[in-house]
Length: 315
Picture 1 (tube, helix red, strand yellow):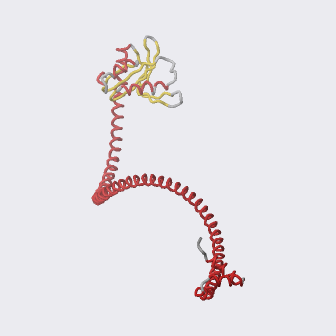
Picture 2 (cartoon, one colour):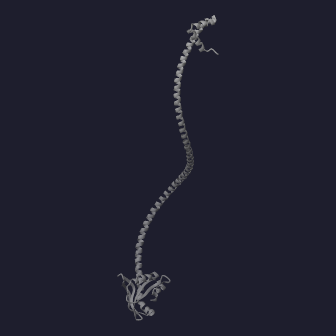
Picture 3 (cartoon, helix red, strand yellow):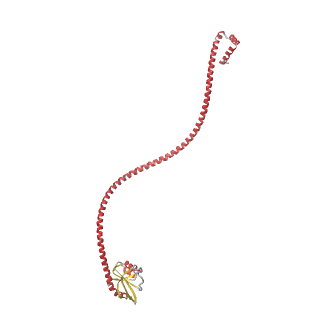
């Protein structure tokens, strides 16, 4: 078995405490070796003291180490708690990262749509720029057209001024012509009346013989111009008015004279004039006299309406 330092310390303690042991040791140990023993013991004592100091230092260090270990344990607890917090934070971070990834995916999808929209917008912008160029060209063309139109407007304004002057002259001439036309119409009206009266005057003289010859109607008294009362109280002018007998029966002679006889004249006489008359108390014999007819079938139309027609050359 190996001889340890502790065994040697125990031996020295026993020597120091028991003289018998010291004597026994002196007897057993060689003189030279025993002579060095005290020095050895001193060195061992010093070494023991050093060892004790070292043990105290080690104990202090141990205490400090234990204190440090407690601190480390507390720090370890804090670290573990912090690690738990970090783990929770890591989980939260992982969840947030997952949400972020999903949001990133949605963002990328939206960015894709945005990029497509931007591409479309860029194309639209290109079209707009092209359209703007076309509009600019159109504007230049419009400006040129406007200048040309302005020149035309000035020309038109000058022409309009000349036209106004010409119109003023024309209006003055028209006023003069209107006055002359009025005079002409007055003269024609007088002439027409003269011609109409002449035709009627000739009819008054010729009709009694013609009516007796052609229709057996004997005129009593004379034929004349006259007026009859309408049902509304107005006085209606009758160009040819008289009385007569036919087959012993009294008849009333009513006639109209027209320079040019038309179907419209016939309707006006029959429908717009005679229909307004009240019952005259005797049958009516209708006569139309004229220089000529204005329609080929006017005479036939008059006969269909119950009127006889005489021409001026019959007189």
